[in-house]
Figure (cartoon, rainbow, N blue to C red):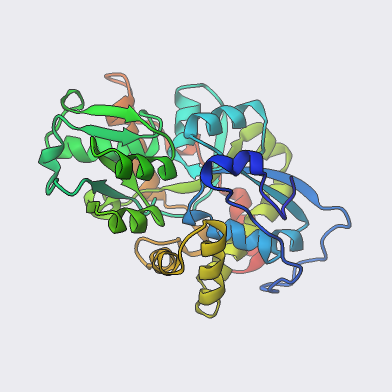
Length: 342
């Protein structure tokens, strides 16, 4: 597998989310010429529109400009992603950063979050017969891993509404693309958390939203990038170059002049109808709930992630953990200095 293509083996279950190469690139900055031999990096991710900066950085030559050959690999669920990172099957994970906290707190793996991305762009979607959160009592909540990330978002939303964990059923379905399919095909699945483009597909299928995470829970650090701390410490310059390419990918993806090409990229790589891709792109550039400028890490949002984990998963009496245990932005900050502040 190379940066010009995603493995059919990895992407068969998701409908072959393929990335094609492009010889030209947009010279957003003028870094030193890349080394003659590109450094290989393997990045594991869930399929979804949140990956547009990664797709852009690969296809527009932005990673290559920084001397990187980035191989994008698909994951079926967060357990596969977390276990694979710990084994060294790949170097970087792009997913909800709550997964990094789970790796450290539950499995004892020393990981480090080094890059932000979005606030999850999630909404609580329900079946057509449900008009309020109270109606989820006694129903099925479709989740990925039941003890991390977006499952915790849903559990927190229900708890705020007075619905206790023993008053509904968790059903482990898998990643977002699998959950929207489960919701559409089986009406007994009453609710789940979805983000674009799956929110667009869900609405078209008659499902509807009871609210966005940003409104229901406040600030939240969703998708970000993390790696094993030992690997990151040993490969600082490589990680800086990765952050630089990713930041430029965000800038390209959110530049108004690139809207048409970016929308076509989403349509092609995610196998979306043009109208769905257009709505998805509009969601990605939303100033409040879309891609975060330059993939900045939301410190307050991550504080809320940790408080949510503590409330729902920690042993009684355990202290709220220090965010510094999980996050190190030195490589991101160095990269931002390299590409300039947008």
